[in-house]
Length: 263
Image (cartoon, rainbow, N blue to C red; front, side):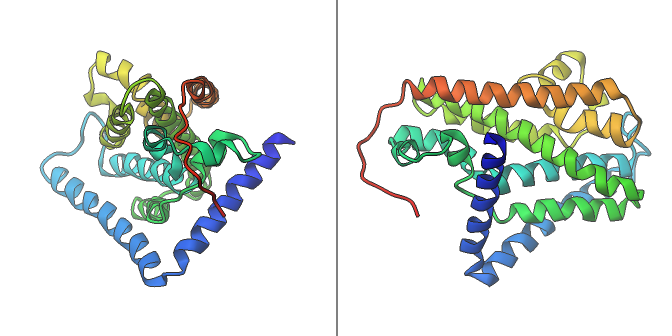
């Protein structure tokens, strides 16, 4: 019952956030189109790279675009559905969590769903543009949806974990911003180019491995049930850890006693 209520809350927030932005139709569609265009520049980058080499560690043009497509999808899910996660540190620093604490909803879900980045719709649409370009088989279009959702949950969870540092240290969200940037940076390169030490980092602190490499290698380019179950298990673990760290952090929160409200 609680899961159903939280899911309903997530989609209600999404609907309201989209409706709010859709009041300015030109800006709404321009944000989406510009994001698709921005992502498309990376296609040109990889076309240039593969014009001088046949592969990167066994990864060809189509395989690298698949990595980029999954990366865009998880980024889109994270910023469209849970855009508030990236502002936790600012709210804590400014003492503006009060309005969320007074509402009869789960504080963390209420907070992270309170904002949406409309340009993230462009990221999600770009996933299917990539699949068309690489001439993907039909079932990839279906499988990419849960892959991006799970990847988005891992992405948001790790951001929340590091944003929760803001309860303990001043401007702790700077660490979360660096981790978020690192995820999007490493996600676009084949895993075979990284050494073992880097791979350990990419499967733990910066979990690009479970977000991008595992689904690409063991769902789309091959199949390994154990790696897939490991990805799902890691997502569940990280979601639970995010809730725990945020809850513990709330005990350190100092209210600013600001009067405010939300509609």
